[in-house]
Image: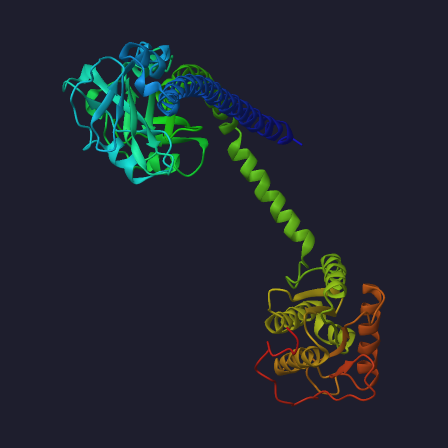
Length: 510
């Protein structure tokens, strides 16, 4: 009782410290998840907004190109006066803020019509990627080319949007091309809140960079094919993940999506530093307080730790004493009966054999009367040692069953194996040559009864013990110093002077 109070304080202190720490960790983890979730929602909304804006404007520009192609197909359009023809071919959308000139190229790449000039400037586009692509691929549709600058300056960077003009017979008849200044994407990206280290990029599906925030003209036109992030972009239409940018090596949370109807990929990313900056500040404050509190609790618990260890050691010693026989060191009867019940149920469930030996010291009362109780105790210790030496598998259980009687439980051992072990124990005891003049053998001997349960041969574990007891009494009645198996008609075991089989683990079923 004196140690109960301090031990309760230790347990409560440790539990309290652990509970406080667990709550704090859980709270911080939830706060971290919330920070990431808010970032995910934010960049998800931004990417959707930018996608819709880009898609809407590109559709308008594409409709303008389609309108030019449709106008060229109208009868008599080419015969109209130049001013009227310009109005028919090039609608008002071509004059949008970031839209450049629209050209109609003939099958040789020469400018045939120009939305900004008549007569058109004499210029050949035969070497441009959009012309080559449209000429080679009838079904390419809207083609978005690589960024270029007409005057060689970064301020004039633009992309070309083109569509093929096909003659009635399907042959190549030229290309209609419109240019879009990258300032449109620049303004659009700058209008989004991405934090100090956030990024946003628009690229072609082949990995060519069209625009990136933070803006650096050197990154426009580079190809990201082969980078880790781009490899993930092309695997699915949309998604999100943690990744490190190949351009600036900053770790970010990326949300990307392919822009429907166009060969474009948009990614929006917030840096992990920006995502968790507020969380880190709060975590530092909370963590400091929790550490201080837990240190205080643990310091108090340490004051009682030595007393707790001493009590646990004493309790363990008492538990061991309660499970073992004080004289022989074997298990006591109560422990053995627990093992019998457990092993019997397991054997019934698995269909495996279970053997039991009951061993009794022959004429032990006479031995005590002749040599005294001290010698009797030494004899029992010697018998117990012989039993323990021959029943030493991990699953074997040996116990003092009461007085001069012992029991051995042998899981996964068939009848042949059980009799072999019993005979080895009998022979080992006889080999002790412990003098016993009242015995017909003149030395201390034991008798053993063996029984094996398999395939529900016994209804209960108690029935198994009773059967072993019957076999033991038969061994006694047959003259002692022998092994009898339950149900055997005769004693087939070795008697005094027989050889002891050395292999104690050859027990039949395993």
